[in-house]
Image 1: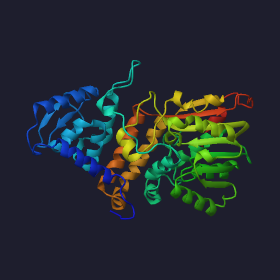
Image 2: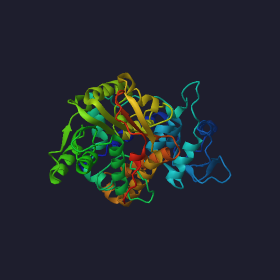
Image 3: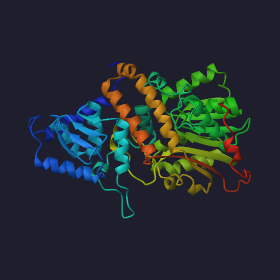
Image 4: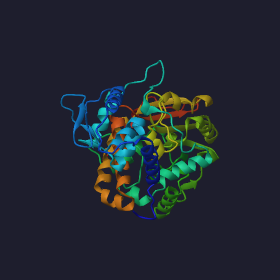
Length: 431
């Protein structure tokens, strides 16, 4: 493992496994499964909707199957893995998959989609109350300091890593595929054009972007729409990358990349845009974000928020929360409007692009798999399995509707300079 790129997953896995193993492992790994363990495992599978699968134990024997001819299954490598799985299913399945103590029969994506499709839906009587949805102490809240720590954990692990599997513009958000046969590069450009057309950007207008990634959206807006952009981001590596690119492309006079939190935005602009940042704001800070937008938009200003979301308010998967996106939360559409309603913004358009995000991540995963040896040299095998699980589970979530991708367009309530139709949004792509 490269000493300059420590695996952010490794220490947590070792600590968790050691603690749980000491607590649960009271028999030899090869000991026969007990009746109580069989009962608990069967009850767990029933709780999560009886997905069609088979359970294979460490000695190769099949414990049981929930359908006549299942296409997928779980392989449990030892007794300690079984008991950890029973103690915190959602968290420990993922951790043990990454370490190799639990594995999957068949295609990982098929396995994950099978679980999502069988998952019980929360009812009006209350939230889903299953063991694998236990509330979790967050690594860090989304305060000014907490947000920096959370963003550093995910986005500052190396530009060279992300460059291996993102598109040439380093866009790490949902692409837009008006033509399903488009390349990832063309679809990412189409996404930015789609956003710019929704905002009806005009030359020499001013735009503020909250959470700019590696700068691709801001630079595209400046280059192709003639606007001036101030882009805020708290990831040091991303901002340095974006500044360097702006200088090389001669756009540094039109685009300013500011390494600071969105809460420090000042000045007034014709348009506000946030692509893939709301997930990291934290619902407790939505009113603060709305206040920032309110003071930043001119009287006829427009705004667009592009965010992963969900249909019902539920906690983020505990493993994703702990190891991949600390502090993250995908809001419902109702919760997104809590950003806008206190300031009387008018919602002009809502679009759901969830299948576009599934397609985007399919391309990412294919490129990731193509470079897995290089990535393993950068980090280690456990890191590769973790990120493959994260990407595949994201595809499964969007394909099955467990996650959504919302684009919400808005303006001030008295703005009457509005189009009479959506025609301007859907100019045929020339790719």
